[in-house]
Image (tube, rainbow, N blue to C red; front, side):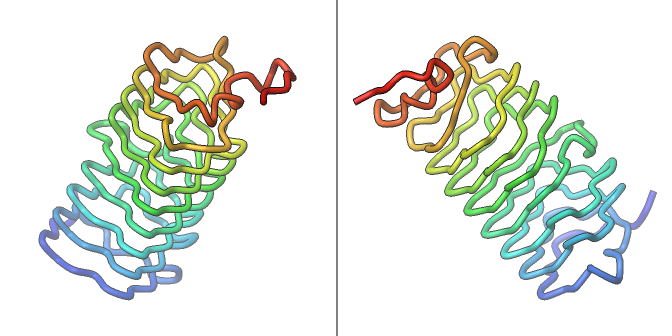
Length: 189
């Protein structure tokens, strides 16, 4: 295995041309770092924070994210399904996750707060007990997705087909209920 790096603060790093050292990072903070289009394959991040970072279109093949938080970060076009699913857990706060994919991932209890998830793909994912707090879900794909006890009360712009997803005990607000009936092409006042 590679090196073990713990309790470090990486600030302002540009990893677009020079690869982040291959290591197991534990309890590290990455602040204002640019990882866009970079190679993060086979990296191991445990209990790390990414603050004001850009990871757009990064290669995440076999990358481990265990108890990782992303805050105020840009995560466009990421294929999270390429990550190692063992122990995977995230918190997303004020992030842009447009065009990202979480295909077939188990994301129970994941918290998305103030995020843009435009055209994000959650096909066949398990989002039971997840929270979408004030999130824009415009054109987000929920197809054969487990949404049991998922909280959509403050989410908006979503379209969820109740016949193609498992939504038992999911929570929705009355103001956004039209997103559940869109396929029926009815007018709600």
